[in-house]
Amino acid sequence: SFVCYAESDDGIHWNKPSLGLYEYEGSKDNNIILRSVDKPEAGGFFDNFFVFIDTNPNCPPDKRYKATAYMHYYRFGGYTSADGIYWKFEGFWDMPGKFDTLNVCWWDEKINKYVAYVRDFHNIPDNGDINAGIRDARRTESDDFVHWTTPELITFNETEDYPIYTNNISRYYRNPDIYIGFP
Image 1 (cartoon, rainbow, N blue to C red):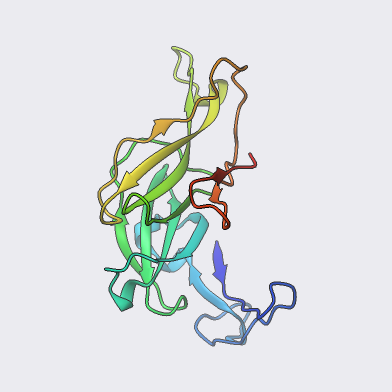
Image 2 (spheres, one colour):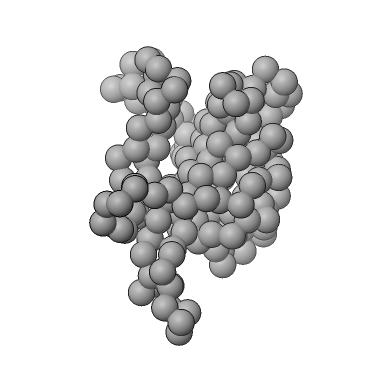
């Protein structure tokens, strides 16, 4: 797996600068910023690298950019960066879940905590086959981007129990009291 860097002034036209950090097919003329093969903590694999700018007023400048990543054997953890190009692994998070889709995270200034929406399964049959269970989205909180609450299942009242693969939850920019998800 690779994570690559691109930048844009308008969100439509993108520039992929040559960063020269990693060799790919014999050349360092590329925009690769992370390779799972170089990350032993990832067990040779990571996926669904989600980056956000930390708006926590107490965030140190060298950790302004944060990221979540799903890693080998359903491990989930965080990375930090000063510039969004050079990343440091901060560790695995001790929380239950499967995480094998994009898991979103940000600083919520209304509650002064990090919030993350992650994936798991429920209604797993007695034989333990998670693929026979129902995929779901869960919410967790952290004061420090290290220690997290147990993710809580998001339910939809008395509606049918639909599987949710990706949650795509974000805050509505015009009203921070509203979260929107397009699973």
